[in-house]
Amino acid sequence: MKALYFENRLSKVMLLKVAERFSRYAALGPFSPLRYAEVPEPTLPNARWLKVRNLCCGLCGTDIHFMFMEMDPKCFTAAIPGVKRKFLGHEVVSEVVEVGKEVDGIAVGDRVAMRIDWPSCFQLEIDPPCPQCAQGNYMLCENLGLGELPVENPGGGFSPYMVLHRTQPFTIPAALSNDAAVLLEPLASAVHGVLKARPRPEDHVLVVGGGTLGLLTVTALRGLVPESQVHCLTRYPFQARVAEKLGAAVIPEGPDVYKKMAEASGGRSITGYFRNEILLGGFDVVYDTVGNDHSLHHALRWAKGGGTVVLMGINWKPGKMDYSPVWSQEVNLIGINCHATESDGRTSFEIAAQLLLSGCLEPEDIITHRFPVSRYKEAVRTFFDKRNSQAIKIVLDHLQFQECS
Ligand SMILES: [Zn+2]
Ligand SMILES: [Zn+2]
Image (cartoon, rainbow, N blue to C red; front, top):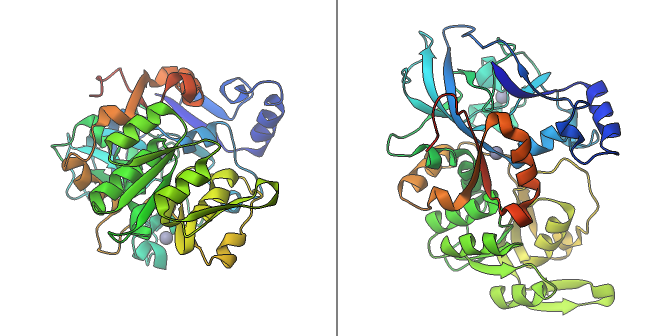
C-alpha cells in the first residue's frame, strides 16, 4: 500500500535543513524524510489488534510540523525517544475490516476514530501501566520509548490500511456523518483544553486564533458553558464569519487590538515606552490555540490578574518571550497535549461526540477543502496559503474506496 510517513533519521533531517535554504517546500521534494511510498500492508500482530481501512483523515498542523521537521532538537519533546518511522494522519475515520479474537466490543463494519495515537502503556501492554496511563492520561505516558510495538508498519490515517491495538480506537456513533466524525479528534483536544480551565458562567473568555482548533474551542465553550461570553481573535474575515456563526464575539487582529481587548473584557489598556502595551483587568480565561512566541506573549497580557492562560497550540521551537505577567499578575499558565480522560471519567472523545451529536456545528463550516491522499502536496500548499485559499480544515480522502461525506 502507498502511505505517507516520516523517516526519523538524523541524516535525513539534516539534509532537509540544508535543502530548505534553497526552497521553502523542500520538505515536499526528494531531499526530505517525508515519504509517500509503498510499504507492506499491515497484518494483525496478535489477537488483541484490529485492522481498519481508512475513509478520510484531516490534515493537522502537527502533521505539517512533521513534514517540514519544524522540531528544534533542543525542545523538550525532541529528547523523548520516538518511533523510527512515523505514519502521518491521526484525525481519521476508518472502517473495521478485521478483528482479533481478544478484541471486545468492536465488529467488522464498525466505524472508528483513533483515540490513542502515540505508543503508550496501552499499545505496549505494559502491566501495571504507569500512573499517568492508569488515569487515562495516555499522552503523558512515563514509559515512552520503553518498548516497541509488535508491528513495524502499522500505517496511519494517510495510509489506506492501518492496524490498531484494541485500546486505541473510539467507536463512532452511528448518527454521526463521516464529515462530523473527522472533527472528533480536534474537537476532543478543544474539549480537553476547555475542561482544563472551565470558565464560570460570568467569566470573560478569549480564544486566540481562528483556525480549526480556535473555532472548535469556541464550539466546545458554547456547548459546555453556554452562559460564558466567548470572544475570538481572528486573522482573516473568513475565520471571523465562522467564529461569529459559532457564537463568539469576534475581535479582528489589528493595530488597535489592545483597546478592543479592554472593551471586550472590561479591563484597561495601558501603553508604556516603546509601544509596550498591556491590559489590567483582562480576561478570566484565555485559550491560546496558536501557541507561538507572539501569541503567548500577548495571551499572558490579555489575562487578568490571577486569570488563566491555556496553551493549546503546538510548537516545537524554544522561543523568546516576556513571561513577566506570570509573576507580576499571578497569571496561571497551563497547557494541554491533545486529549485524555476528563475528571468526570469520560474521555475527551466521548464528550466531543456528544457535542457533535447535539448539532453544535455544521461540519461544512469547518471542512473547507478535500483532496485525495495522493495530492497531499497540493493540500499542504493550500494549508500554507490560507489568505487566498481560505482554508480551515483540509481533509484527505482515500478515494479508491469511497467519497467521504
Ligand atoms: Zn490533530
Ligand atoms: Zn504509560
